Amino acid sequence: MTPEPTSRLARLRAGTRDAHDRIETVPALHRLLAADLTQAEYVAVLRHLHAFHAGIEPAIASELEALPEAAAMLDGARPRALARDLAWFGASTLPPPVPPPLEGIAAALGGLYVIEGSGLGGRVIARHLTASLGVADGAGGSFYCRLDADSAKRRWQALTTLLERSDADTGQMVSGACTVFHAMESWLRTSEIVAGMTRPFEMREAVTP
Image 1 (cartoon, rainbow, N blue to C red):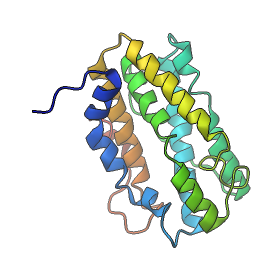
Image 2: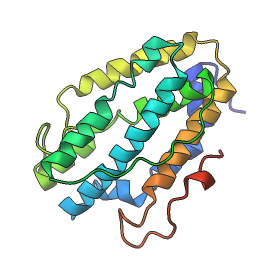
Image 3: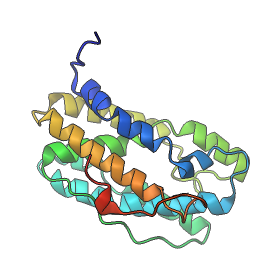
C-alpha cells in the first residue's frame, strides 16, 4: 500500500496529478516541440498564454493581499514577457478569459502553485524554439528563452517554503490548483490554436475540479 504523502508539496502534487497530466495532452502545447512547428502556430500559442496569464494572475494576487510575499510572485513578469514576444512578431493580444473563482487564501495559494510551476522545465522548449524558429530572449522568445531562467527555480523554492509553513487548508489548496489547471486546459483547447480540435472553450464548464 502506497503511504500517504506527508509534505504539503507532496500532497499538492498527488492531488493535482490527473489535472497536470491532462495539461500535457493539450495539442497546442505539443506543437511547441514539433519538428514542423510554424511561426503562426507559435504566435497563436503565445497569444493564448498571454491572455490567460493577464487575466488570472491579478485575480490570484487579489486573494493573496494578506500574504505580500506570495502576492509579489504575481508581479506581471509573465504577461509582460509574453506581450514583448507578441510585439516582436507584430501580433495583437487577445482579451483575457474570465478567471475562475478562487476565493480565499488557500485556493489562491493552490492557483499560485500552478502558475509558478508552469515556469519550470521550459528549457527544452526554449532550445527547440531557438533551433526551429530562431527566437531568443528579446527576439520573440522572452517568455520561454528568458536569460534569468534560474530565478524561476529560486521563486519555486521560495513558494514551496511558504506553502509548507502556511496553515491554510491543504484540501482547499488542491481544489484551487485543480481549478486553475482545468481553466488553463480549457482555454488552450481552442480551435483557434490548432486546427482539428474538437470542442470550443467554455470557462464556466471548466472550473469545477
